[in-house]
Image 1: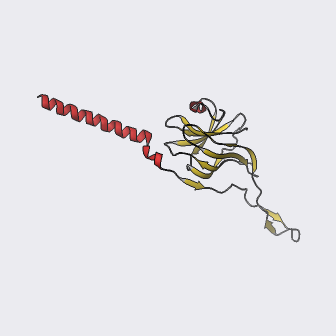
Image 2: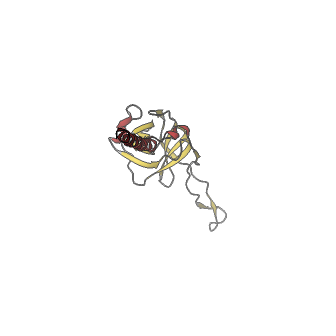
Image 3: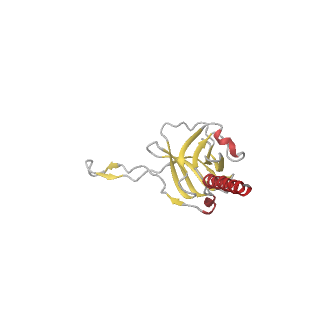
Length: 180
């Protein structure tokens, strides 16, 4: 009888350990410590517009694309994970605004997102979800150059940083100061 009870307890303990192990793998995704991804998106430019020529007002030649205007930029500082690179807010000639990362280098992790926030860059990891945040989407890659469209009509007043945010664990991987 005692052996049967011991066998049932052993199976119950093994089942609990298996469930706990599966949950830990889902939550922490430890393989991401060894993975990375790279993207190299082009600098956004306005669409080419036709401009009339001096010789014939009815025919048009494409005007050269106008360059985006830099509104602000900052350098990433590491927080929970080593992060480096540049963050720049650009305004395209058509008025659209884009957040651009150049030379980004960070760690991979579960559920990473890009936010513009009213918190200062650096320091306490947990402060970024306490105030105002404009969520721009999932981090596209851990390395390289990438663009994030800022939704039209978004007020940038009072936003002071961009953060690579881990939603699963509520920590900042890295952030960059932006004076908007």
